[in-house]
Image (cartoon, rainbow over all chains, first blue to last red; front, side, top):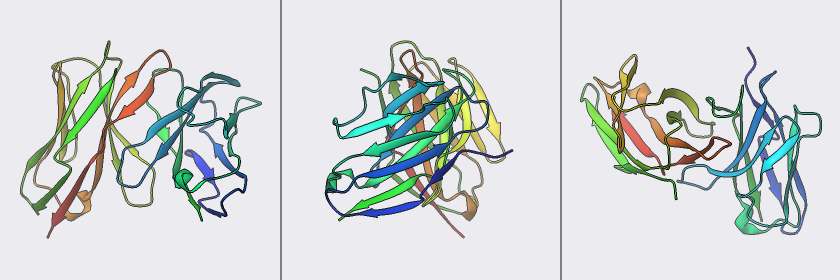
Length: 113
Length: 110
């Protein structure tokens, strides 16, 4: 079946621009996670949704980062007033339920100039 | 604080030369230890989940084992197509968010 999809795959933004990154999880998966991966590092947790409820946003690095999942399926990660340090790969993962295996999308590579 | 450390950071093997990757972890109540494979420009691909000490799982040339403090990913007679970064992670907290190590980049030369 279809896996997790993310769009766009690549995004170049000028410093100060707002960006929106989209995640389509596996159909029926209740749990959705966002991670940030810097070059040469493992992914780091950003935020977690259970259906439409954002239950954990402890990993969001600043109030410029905002995520939503209004209907409990597609999720959007928005970064306002992008900075160079925001350059990274943003990964989305979904799982059938909490505490179960997470399946990752291909990621969105964000470059802020 | 939950933590994961992988070693070595990089590993070069000749085709057919078996070896092991290490993942040391500290977590308050293990809810699962996960191994993923990541190819350049792609997202992590799920390999194994281990839940309790003594558990082992195998898939083709890969075998994952778990003790109370670490996990090993054994690679038997590797092939060039096994070249990738291997990530280890533990599930943490009530949400099951993953805490990752920095990964081991494996290169298998023909």
